[in-house]
Amino acid sequence: DAAKKRYEGLETINQVFMRYGKVPALICCPGWSHKPEVAAIMTAKTDGISGLFPSLAVTDMPCDETLEDYTEASEWKRRNSYTHTHQIVCWPKGKLGDKMYHLSTIFACLCAVTDDEFGEIPYASPSKMAAAVTDTGKELLLDLNQANFLNGAGIVTLFNWESGWMLWGDETGCYPSNTDPKDRFINIRRFYNWWAVKFILRWFQK
Image 1: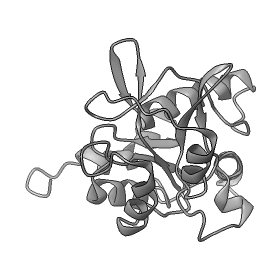
Image 2: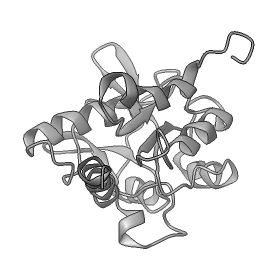
Image 3: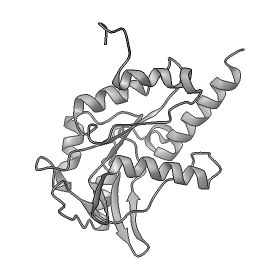
Image 4: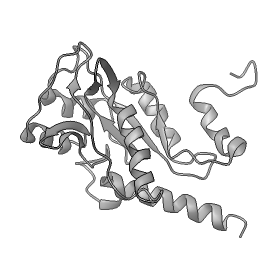
């Protein structure tokens, strides 16, 4: 806000480290990131928080009448430029009990749980959930071929197997146009970001 001379919204992310000494690893805006203009700003912030630190934007695609069929997801993603190396693209929503959650929320929470289980080092892929739904509550029962279709388009989705619902997909938004492992795979990209932050914090004074 230029008139009030203060940062608001996503602009405040550059102040997190200065205020709290913490580096944001994931940028999430559930309920907003399905809007291409918001997702674009989120992704732009990942290239250098506070001018230094890499991050990842966890974004959703819409689950309303504009995108209720998995076969349309790949084209929507491409047309709306959800294709950045530092972007994770999620579709549809998850449901637990009577509550529906944006899949970006579920992904971020499971990342935290998984990282805790692996000694705070982000090298494993998160999983787990209860149902896949659209905005209207319509349940989507994706089979393996359908889930892999979305995965092949660089979209994280939900898949139900004998052990229960799980996150399915380990590709960032840049896939399939970019197949470089350090850019393509979420767990590798997260680890590279984590190591870069560690390196910067340790050697910045040098």
